[in-house]
Image (cartoon, rainbow, N blue to C red; front, side, top):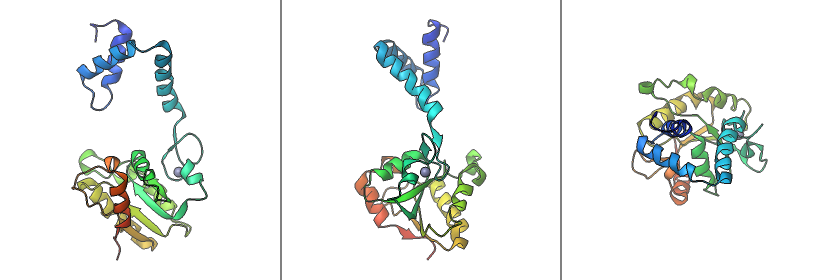
Length: 201
Ligand SMILES: [Zn+2]
């Protein structure tokens, strides 16, 4: 990006590192930043740094949080007997939009993907198993996405969790295969929770 004065070139390069952003969009965004007010630019920069520095992983559910337990794990009103296993923090946000869900979560941090070299050790599965040591959890709802990797991960977890004697269920999507939980509306997701089907009989 030697064509641009240095800070602008760095800004363009930074935008290009984000998913789904090519050179053209990166350039457009960088010029848009130049047009921000001093205050908006400062807010933007500090939001990036604070997000990066202050956000941590909840020691229990592996969701994102500021410090210590996440607000969901810390909430005594939540139903700890119902545990919903999701791929990412964005999926937790999707579930939280469904007000009827009052259980807790476990964020895997991805899905198994032999093609991309993602093995069980790379996901928060050990943390999930350690949550089953006391008898609090009665049902595990596996809510990985309805695509090949999400289904394979759900089957893997169902097999792994079987000896623990908890009820294991799978979200009943009623959605086209390959659709993304993140973009599922509340009504559909609520229906998918209500219609969940048992995976261990
Ligand atoms: Zn948590």
